Image (cartoon, rainbow, N blue to C red; front, side, top):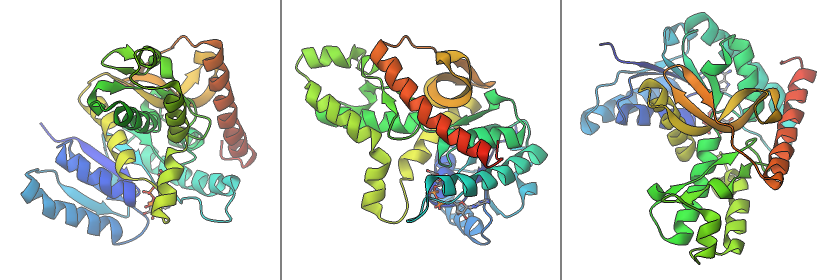
Length: 318
Ligand code: APR
């Protein structure tokens, strides 16, 4: 049986890490694509030279032509520019929308059957532009944010309660920004919901509130530390978990930016919700029951995504 083919569009910080993880986890052959010449080839060769040591047989290839992503099974998109000082969010939307159009064309012409995971920010708007440009069915195009935001939440909770990260489960929903919604009621340690853990004295409500706030600003915390560039290890791990669920038909239940058609009262937009990822792509959207307060926070988050989508429409990107 032929190996799966994984196309990584954008060979920057996240793209390089995605390539390494794809090799280490033996997910398939990897094509690293970028508009810069030399970078994808150099990173592919460097990782290929790690393969004998690590013991994986994936083929790694750098590319500057979309023809090289032909028949890819999975495409993970990180192409774009980060926000630079003096750049407004709308400037970023304009630049990265254009990139999503190019990438969408490349996917449409070369691998229209792929499962596509978008990471480029502003995520919830860019994944929509990408899906429209690629012309793929919405269940084959999703955005990675929820797994990352939930992983940050899980890490902080595990640290605070001094338990294994493996036993902490959490859902962070809504848009990928300061308005994201860490749903504490559905966050658990070995099945015990967070509100019960507060009652049991494992963690205080104050600490939970601090962790919620820190999670919301998790991306910014890393940017402030790195000074140049943003997080890349955890974003790459998160996208690989989604790709693996698709390729192995694991049907993991993960939060992802998915196209909504009425679920949660949202229509015609990508927003972070729990989904089931299997070999058909986004196979199911899980509709949680919210309390009034949770629904209010979710609606607020959806509004901030809507503003971004409107900005894309104004620019003619959607
Ligand atoms: N086509 C292909 N690649 C492109 C294009 C394009 N039109 N425009 C830019 N790129 C490439 C750049 O050359 C660069 O190598 O995208 C890559 C982006 O890499 P980094 O700048 O290192 O960014 P990274 O940290 O990987 O993050 C990528 O993910 O989390 C988001 O906000 C982040 O949008 C950003 C994206």
